[in-house]
Image 1 (cartoon, rainbow, N blue to C red):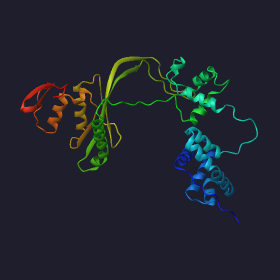
Image 2 (spheres, rainbow, N blue to C red):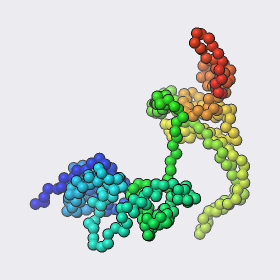
Image 3 (cartoon, rainbow, N blue to C red):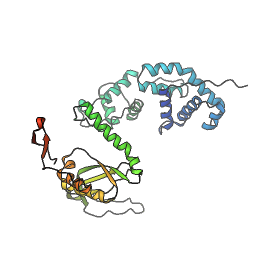
Image 4 (cartoon, helix red, strand yellow):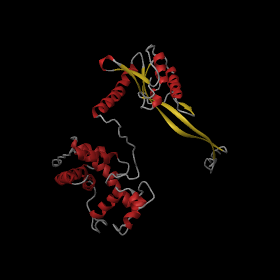
Length: 345
């Protein structure tokens, strides 16, 4: 009579690591298979159901359930006291085949930590004329510093992937210039609310289009000096290397928040306030019966006098606009004065 299956317990963080293994395109099929066993066991599946799902024998499923249960307490200690890379490595070791006789690991924990530390430094600190580390450059540097006598770029890449370090990648971010935190939160909330409301406004009978608009400047207008030769049997398509310059162009584009499409883009040589007004005019004319919400940054051409005049006339607001670069402001005691106010009307 078969015994009772080992009860599987996993923490939230362990579940994330196991799910990551299952989704991985680089993990071995055996590792993915065993991670599935633990996840399904945690969901309450019995050994026979799991065996059918992962195409293994029932006894094999039982082995990996017991292996996980026996190592659970040790894994929790690592999870709470060591780095994320160590925790992931320990999780994979539990689901790996039992160690066989032979030599131990080639690199010590101190050497691996040294390699990761170098990867976190800017290459310029090492006198290298590059902006981001490659596996080959990093391998050369750690050997040059004497951290290891010999190591391959693939092994360095393995340690970086385990630690989830990607020195060859970067992402842009922007620090707000707004000094008042409360005002900044209010501004962010207004934009986020605008995006959240966009789908419902778009579905209404009176459709409202919510659009993000911005420019891309300095696009080179290049023309190849010879035509492209199409591919032939045994020969790929060939493109002429040399080209003729025709200056630069500016693209003004609209990203529709709901549909995700680019609508009514315009291309021209400049990005003046007249160009931006004509772009907005052309966009509105694609569906003149609809309502439009444009989300833009604070570039001066996005809040110009001509744009305000266009909105005033198109929406039949019939509001007095005053003079360009002047704004009348009420002062204390009922007095008034005219003050400069950028390019706003």
